Image (cartoon, rainbow, N blue to C red; front, side):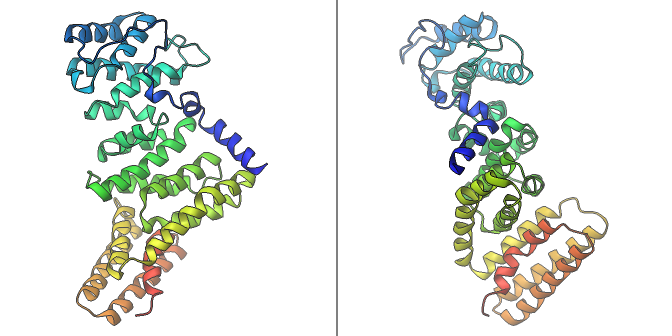
Length: 358
């Protein structure tokens, strides 16, 4: 019964994903009798299809998209790419605003055409294509990855997408992939962008709604960063207030991810744990002012002193300095300079380090 309830709620949360699930790989017609293009389709035909996507009737647009799905990605010229990006942008806006006739599909199933255009745009390796794909992240994990690898470029639109109820889960998760991509492939992700992501997750993990809980849990799991473990701990508390669905998310997503990250954290070196704290502190402190700025400067300086002690083989002095940092964060929490969740993030890896035998 619980699993059925959880599945039902998920369907209500992400209707677009369910409308178009599996449609990302469509190569068949969404209209009547789409022409089949050969791999060697002449460029003049490709150009004609691009023009039909720009100015054709709904049926002509659908037939042109189906034809282009048969064309190798290398044969899609820059002009075709621009036409596809413009069409994806148009359809995304039309669907969001409820414009009748937004796609050639029926009103009851307008996802197929959108998914087909998104599939073509995902073949384009341009910043414009990645931005256009943000409203389409619910179509597939592959499109989420395409968007995420752009790093800084897509953080702001993804953060904005988390405020759209039907997009919240996918947008939160894609931010997790942005974090992972930056850590694993050095994709560009500035301190300001990390700060935006953390702020978004911190707000979402305290919402006792199904989509927020599911999205943050999935995001942290995808990010794969042990220093984010405290977000999952907070998630367990939030889930306990969210009724049956909260328990469903807790048992199926949050707890397994928490176990995995805690195991990973246990194998990290002392310096890695400390670097995690330094990076989170830097992100949380971006743009800090007043008492918060003073705390941030002090914590940053002391963490660097502690790291130097560890690098130079002086665990005793390192432990003393890091213990002082922990206490400074605790006092800041008592004075409301930082929130409970920020305190948990700042001291999570630090606490794991201090709990080890030295």
